[in-house]
Structures are given as C-alpha cells and as structure tokens.
Image 1 (cartoon, rainbow, N blue to C red):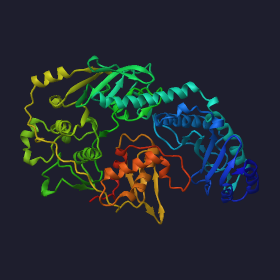
Image 2: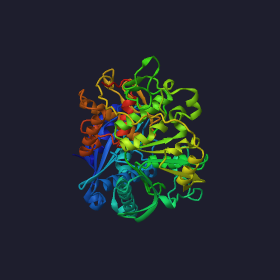
Image 3: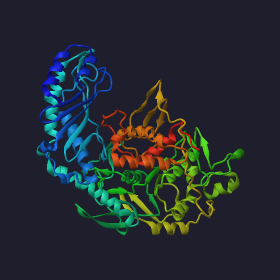
Image 4: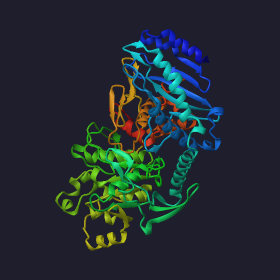
Length: 570
C-alpha cells in the first residue's frame, strides 16, 4: 500500500498532461485516517467516473458490533451510512471542477426502501464506502491540483461527517436499525397469524405527489385507522405493541368511490414487500414477501407460458398450454403475468381494476347471453379467483370500483371512504343476495396446471462487437446486449440499482442453464449464492466493485427474463 505522499507526488507529476495520465494513480493508498483504493480510472472526463473504495478501520470508525450483528441490522446500518454519505457529499463537494464529470463525487442514492446494497460495507474490521469520482480536467488535460483537493480535503471531510460513529447521531442510527428489525419481524408474523398484509394504525399512506415517493405532509393526510373487525395487535421486538389492520389470507376486495384511497392502500400494500425508512409513513405496512402486483401489459412478449387456465379455444386451433406471442393483448398479457408469478411461487396477487383488462376481469350475464361460452376463449378472473385460493393457497387483494359481481367470490370487503377504511363484508354479501346477477360460472372445477419452463442459453448473450453491454437506463429500462428490456409495467421494482443488478444476474445465471433446470431453479440458485457471498459476486470487474447494486426479488428478475425478446425456453 502506497503512502499519501506518493499519491501527492504522482498528481504533481501528471499536472497538465493528457487525461490518460490519471491511470498512474490506480492502486491502494494509506491516507492515515482511512485507506483509499482506486480500483478503476476513467479514460476520459466524459466517461463513466473513476471507481474508488474508502475504507476506515473499525478502530477509527468505532461502530458498536450490536449495530451489525445480524443481517437485518447490518443492512440497516449500511443503508443509513449510505444516506449520510450522500448528504455529506451535498454539503462538502465542490462539484464543478472542469470539463465533463470533473469534480463529481457520487454514491449510490437510496429510495424510501431499505435494501441490501453494495454502496457501503460494514464488517467487524472496517467500514467501506464504494463511490465514484470524476477526476478533474481542463478539456482533456489533467487538473492535478483540483484532484488533490478532492483526495486530501474533500474525502477526509466526508469520512469525518459520514463514517465515524462519534460524529453521527447515535439515536437515529439505533432507530434506523430497530425499525428495520421490527418490520422484518412483523413480516415473519404474517403467515403465523394467517395474514397476507398488515397496515399499521397511524400510517401515512398517500405520497406527496405522483412524481414523489415521499410521504404527504401529516397535516394534509388522513392517518390510517383499522376497522375494528380487522384490527390485530403485534408485540414487536423494539417498538413493543402495535395495532393495525390485518388482511387475512383469501380473497379481499378494496372498494369505494373514486379518489377515496383504494389504489393508495393497494400501492402501500404492494410496497410492503420492502422495509421502509423511519418517517416514510409506511414503516408499519408489511406484506408477504411473495406478493406480486399484476396488471395488463399490451405489447409484451410471452414465451411458451401456460395460459390455458384463463385462455383456451383460440381461433384457428392455436394452443395456449405453451403460448407464445411477440405482441400480447391486454387479456393475454395479464394471464401470462399471473401464470409467470405462480411459476415463481407467488402466494399473493395484487390487482387494480384500473390497470386490468376488462374482458379478463369479468364477463357479465348479458355478455354471456350474447356470446356463447364456446365462442369466448377467455375465462375471466372472477371464475378462477376462488380456485386460486382453494387449489393453490394463493390469496388475492383486488381494488374494484365498478364490478359488484366479485362480491359473491369475496371473503371480505374493505371500503375506503375519504381515506378511512371500513369493513363492509356483511353489507356486500347482503347486496349480492338481494341483487343476484345469475351469471354462469365458467371456471370449471379446478384452477389448472402450473407448468415450470426450462430456459435455454440461446438469446442470453449480451455482447455487442465483442464487448459485454449490460446497463440500466433508469429504473424501467435495461439494456441487455442489443435488446432493450422494458420494465415499466413491473411495478414493484423500486430502485435503479435493482435494475442494474437484474441485468448482471441474468448474465451471471446463464451458466446455470443446462436444459434441465427450470427458470425458478436457476434464479433461486443464483440468489442463494448471492445470499452466501453477497452482491459482490455479480461485479464484472475482477477484484473491484462498482458499488451500485441493490438486491432485487426473484419476481422482478423473472420479469426481466420474460420480457427479453430473445429469451427462449424448451
């Protein structure tokens, strides 16, 4: 490991030289209070920034081991330190120091969710921040003095403000860790209690705006209160006893007038598969980790999916047991989304009438009378939802505003009235009995088969002109070789770093594809290896790390495979 003086003298030597002279500083350095690892040096001021690791020995960092003894607590601490480091960059970094990305200091930004990330690593021996830095240049000439200020002035300040326990708010660190631990415990309690979701009393579910995931101001929002008949109490390890609405397994309808909070409640439930930061408003909203939001998705590719439980008897004898199309309709895409989720092991489906295909959701008695059953290939969801639960143990939460026919199938009905939740199951059943529709059941005697597909390596090569091309282009778009994977309708993808990880997981897991393993098995094995070795396993840089991964769920990984237009299965 080289000295601080060596780095300083190297910078002086390359002052004013061509930008590629910066390659001379690559290596590791002892800067007394911390160690600096310059793993990758950009070749141009406009290229991807230089990648560094800033490592502080625990003797200096001073974080008590109780803060990271478990995986849940360590994840929370790493998340908290990442947020603190990002805030310190905003306060400390000068930013503009020349052309292109000159002066940039960057750490992976965090969403409202607490995710396992690679941006920060906490061990008993050290704390390590993985960051990017834009090395300063005038045109394409080295500005070594500006670089020296970044290394010797800004980085030490960042370390002091964000990586030392003594300079941080210990109470906030404790609350961050204990909150994450409580949410994980609460999620574990769901199945034991026969629940699929819990929405805590006093939660703030509405967001600040459609473009912001921050909570609405408490003065403007209606805090959530559970209906008495659905209220349950849980004793959390840190917060103690908390009360809220427990949604039991089975079929649950969320009804009410427009703009009264139906979709807001469902969105909170769908995000409840993740833990949230203190102050988010949804810290007490948790959902089974295997919940999947389902919607129609016109135009998506479908690859040999068994959609026969929902769609059969297509014109011209086209089969639906291994159904493929390059441009799915609303109904076929929604059927495929459900079957792919079941293939991956989902135990809870979340649907909103507003984002569903009408002909997939319901076929009323008048349409049944006009179009005979043998002329209609679609078996609507209303006729399969009970089979889903009775045959497969898969629950459903469904937002409805226009179809009371679902009252017959529902186990419970929750009505949102000016953001207040009311339990109205008995009233809904009375109405269903009073106004019988006499529609015919079209779902048969059972749900149907779940067929596990076996992926092929064909089409999973992301190289272009001899180079591997995988990149996240925002949250909802993944470049994989020559293909762009559209993930805009995958609604439980919450962080661009998850998208980035998904691309590399697809590439990494290709070696597990052997013509025998199912897609579920391939992804499960990959995630098991990640759990044992960490997300570092994915890094395309030998012995280096970009620090810009967040752990995705298997459902979003599978969604990316299924939407890759070159993906093929047996």
